[in-house]
Length: 602
Image (cartoon, rainbow, N blue to C red):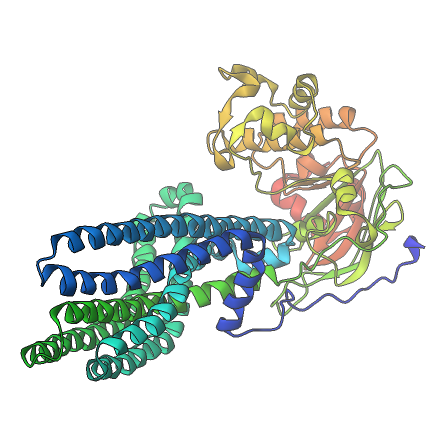
């Protein structure tokens, strides 16, 4: 039976992630998983890339033949005939290159789209615990910058991993047919360039990891600055915020410069080896032409092959320079995708409730991840349909935490929260959303119209329902006064309306959703006392059959509640009516005396 569920189910001590994998395993696994749906595009890219590479390798041979047998002998007909064929091969090469880039880009962009979609869907499944674990700035970076790093590597890597091996093997084979000693000179340079690539990779992985963390930090500073701009202006802390941003910006710049120095040093080293090799080849070739052992066309072909081979090595170096950041990015992406949400729908979840929405908390205890002490301990609370239950206590008493546990934003560590006798951990999350309506302490509105915000929890609500909710929330007058009424556009977070208006719109949004249980987390704090009283009177009529739980700081907001629960340091230290608690509970009496005169309190 659902109601007989054990009171305590151990909670994971941290968001669960899959086994930690190496950066190489992370990126290979990520690419394998996300390229599978795009394998047709991938195969087309590979086919056209092979055709382009082989055509590029064939052109120097054609050019040598053209010079040796046509230009050197003055055979115009041969030049025209072979030149036309060479032009056809060039057109084939260019066509294959264009198609390879087109299909490769489609595969890479499709991978990026799918990665972003899955990251967003995964974040949607996260509980508040996982959101706190990763942090909003880091999740934004992983969904944008980290995905871009992986996509960029794929775009260039598709070319390098196909072109470079073919160019190296076929190019060296063709170079050997032209001249063995000069091929030895060419081979002598490649190990030095490979060593430079190796040191680039091992040096850049830790530097890239630091750089991605620095990007997280600067995103966090920017996000806090933008969302907290009013507080910054109010306290004239512009200089302080500028210093914070400058520090984060300097750290990011330093990290980027470290990466750049590694790239510049080893890249320049490899280029020096390549240039020395080219000079040596020209010098040896000139000697061979002088003694008649090599034709000029063969020298030109050999230099072309050397350029293709060294160019593929340099191109590989460029891709290997991108690889460390992409490896780190892939690991960070995999960390999000492999993190199991700590709150999920149970098997055989309850989809309907038998009663009208009676809320019962028994022995509830909760501690935030990483905190030394529990926020709540042994909390009992009942909220019945048709009654108002108020919660009051000093700052830090655990009032907001308690309300956040009811819609299962977090799971309790001990005890149970039941609605109509059903543990919320046994309920389908959609059922919880239909049953419990939470108006949070900081009301948040989305960018869009007033109507779209009000319909957020009930997309099918008609305008009549919206206006009724606005009337109850004491918001109808100011909405009517707006030029576009319900169609008025408000900014992200509700920045284009006042704090009181934002709170009332948030209350109206919850009324439109029409849940059985209403949770008001200090949702009247920005209202004047007259509006507060009018709103509570309207709620008493409009949602008379629902259970109301109100967290408030003002005694005037809760004094008429059917039941007042006093929280102190995470424990319930008193339950009763206003008059009962005023006489028997010193904690409540102290709160009352701090706000009202004795005559007002009575």
